[in-house]
Length: 435
Image (cartoon, rainbow, N blue to C red; front, top):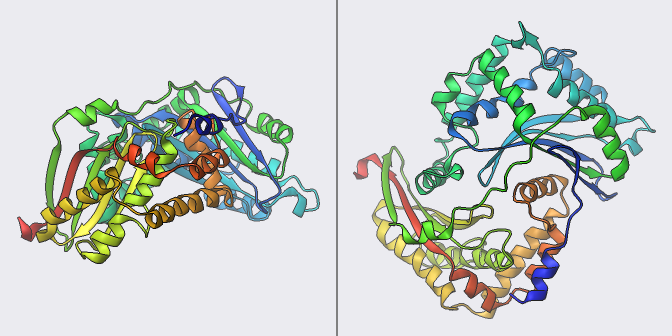
């Protein structure tokens, strides 16, 4: 990629540290009717901690000191024109992110009633003044959310396509935080009690990096004032920048080939690849176009050739984990087609590496990427998720800069990006009858 593209890509975004370890990102715009606000607590994924942190947002949302149950909280939210405060748990690279996403009507539509301020004051009650019994969380609330968390973890196995990808990452990254689930493991989840949950709540407030995001029509000064008023007591720590696994580990180590059996009617083939390119690399725009050309769009080689033309897969697609330097292929196949399907998937990657694609294929891939990137600008929810990823990866560019750089990617850039991709792990989930 030409140097001037990378210079444009690396334009700085506005992100302010308003307290130690507490960062605020504001996008002031009249484009959206409903403002979006989020607060995220970031910590490096660790097996013994993941389930405990994953429990906290839903537990806190059960009730607080001022509004001790969900019914009373719902009443307050309804009084705020149906505002929402929703708990979430996400994984961004090697980092677990837990917190709340809020949306509300704009103050301009309520005759001046400060809905934004009131929503954040309610959020502060939920987050900072939880409902306690004997100085710890209510054991009944903990038991309920513990059961819900266990159900969520167990439910991951029900969607076999998602499960196969999860297992791929667990096997591929068995000694890396990225291989862990953001929900944690069942064994740890089942052991959580009121005292344990409260100790992790205290840890969350004292040892996480805190990222606050706002997108709406309020200006940055107003947002910062309201945040300081409602959440100003928060203090965090700045995490060390998470790094992707050094590419040499994925390239030089022995390739993993794992087959597991389960009661499935359709085999699930998942392939994990390492790449030297991550979202902070100047070659990243070329990588996302390469991924679209290979398997990340309905005009891709995997879709048109392996799925449509050869009918080897019920589905076949590739995705990027931009903070981890990983590309994954997911496919559903007949068990007897395992070898030929794997061979053809790898053949399509080699075709991209050897520039065996025409201008029409390249243009379709590039258009697909640009359409997806531009869609981010039209959705406050997508903007919030994009900005959280950027914050985790310490990435200083926004969607506009990424669009600018992607528009200037050419076929030579794509071939070069494909050349950095190396197969690391093959995971196959097949039916028990096919042992």
